[in-house]
Every structure is written in structure tokens, then in C-alpha cells.
Amino acid sequence: MDGDASRVVSARREIAAPAEVIFELIADPAQQPRWDGNDNLAEAPAGQRVRAVGEVFVMTITKGSDRENRIVEFEEGRRIAWRPAEVGKEPPGHLWRWELEPLGDNRTLVTHTYDWSQLTDEKRLVRARATTSDKLRASIDRLAAIAEP
Image 1 (cartoon, rainbow, N blue to C red):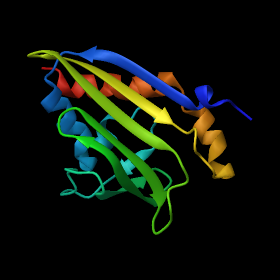
Image 2 (cartoon, rainbow, N blue to C red; image 1 turned 45 degrees about the vertical axis):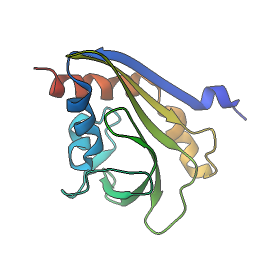
Image 3 (tube, rainbow, N blue to C red; image 1 turned 60 degrees about the horizontal axis):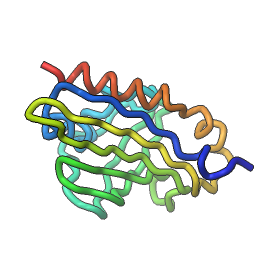
Image 4 (cartoon, rainbow, N blue to C red; image 1 turned 90 degrees about the horizontal axis):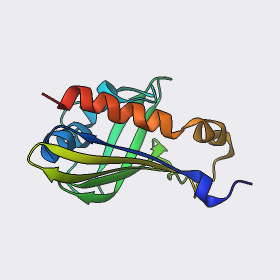
């Protein structure tokens, strides 16, 4: 089995936009399909803007099924993380995290992490292994294209 280190993948880059602008695109699930570099997200109903740990937002993935995403980390404008699960089921153990570090008025260091070190669902392992830092970087790049003036 893989070691835990290979089960935590991340990417980072500076984006020429304020952290608040970038965070709004991440914390509003309806915006997420616009920048998803993993090509996994189809749509999310409007009005689910995340504001606290414990909230759940629903996302339809490209295969047509819905996922409930439980917020497990939240700091407005700085950090958000969620654990996806099939509707009505417990999360199988993977986590998506975004961290934003303001570097000035219009620059933000953005770190995107996919952590599957606790993933227990065998049928998800192939997809988890395929989620590389390049795919995470693609999400950051797409986010930059939308957020930068």
C-alpha cells in the first residue's frame, strides 16, 4: 500500500487578485465547476455559499450523481476544506483543502491540497491516484484566469 506521503498531493501559485475575491469563487459551490481542473464537477445549486465548519453543500459531478460535501475547516477569506460523500453516507476519507495567504493588496499565494491518506473506499483508489499535483495546479490556473483582472 502507498505511504501516507504519496496520498497527500498539493499545488500552489501566486494569483494577482485579492484573497477575498479568490475565496468567494471557492466558497460558493455554484462557481466551482468554472475552475475545476479535475473536470469532475458539473453543477451546484445557487445559494449554498459556505460560511462555517459543519455546513454541507451539494454538488452534481460529471457522472451525474450528487455529492454532499461536509465543511471540516473554515476561516473566512483564508482556508476552507471539505470531505465529499455520496448523499446520505459517511465520507469515505478524502479531503479537498484550499489555503489563501495574502501577499499584498492584489496578490495571494493559493495552495490547493487533495488528501486521501484516510480513504477507505477501494473503488475510489484509482481516481484518487489519478489526482495529481498537475490537476490541482490546473484548478488554480483556471481560478486565476477568472479572478485576475
